[in-house]
Image (cartoon, rainbow, N blue to C red; front, side, top):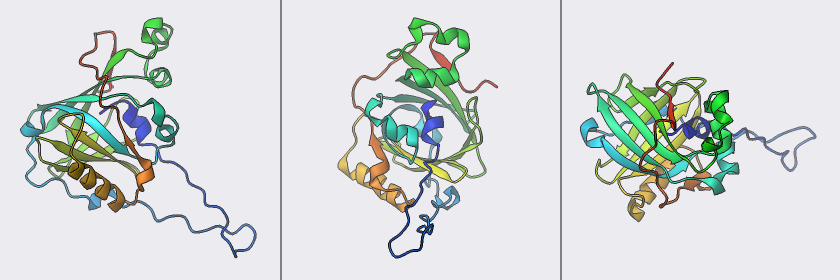
Amino acid sequence: MAALGTLLLLGLLLTAAPGLGQGPGRRRRPPPPQRPLEEVAAQEGLSLPELAGRWFLVGVASRCSYLAEHSHQLEATAVMVTVLDGQSLAISTFRKLLWDILLQHLPEEKTKSQENRDGMCWEIRQRYLPAQAHGCFLLKGRGYGSRVDVVVGETDHSHYAILYYQTGRSISIKLYGRSSQVSNAVVDKFEQRVRAMGLSEDVIYYFPTYGFCDAADEFHILDETKP
């Protein structure tokens, strides 16, 4: 999905304050680690051809500190999925990018251009490579410090899809819809899965339902598939 995914997958380091009744310097036990992605089953009967087409990013659950700090600046995000060779997925994400994100991905000469300031529509290209199990993928691209495992956890192909992303032991969950708004029943499914992974509802962020980018010109493409 988006280059922002790099930031969405960063873990938030949590430090616990000393507990009541404990001696000086003693700290409460840290919360249990999030369940590993291996415990998440991929959607049974997943059809990649039916998964193809346009999707809208509805919500993200993540402990990412960057996302928490910039939640007021979320941009409407649309995704186009294309099936390659019957197994891989080509992902094109269309959204406006914040300037500080561009600084991390653009060559220095491009960052000097006023045309690349906030507000421009960008296309971010990524490729999901097939993993061992059907419905599981590996995302590797420029800008990722380590592998990102992806699992299509649940989808009906025509209305919604819930995807899991894991880097190390840091997990994020994304809700996509065929339209920018999904039913309350789908939102409930998403939030139940979030809680089941040990994430609380205060780390769920819902995205705008208007202001989508339909395309980007050749000068505003971030190709994460290139080495």
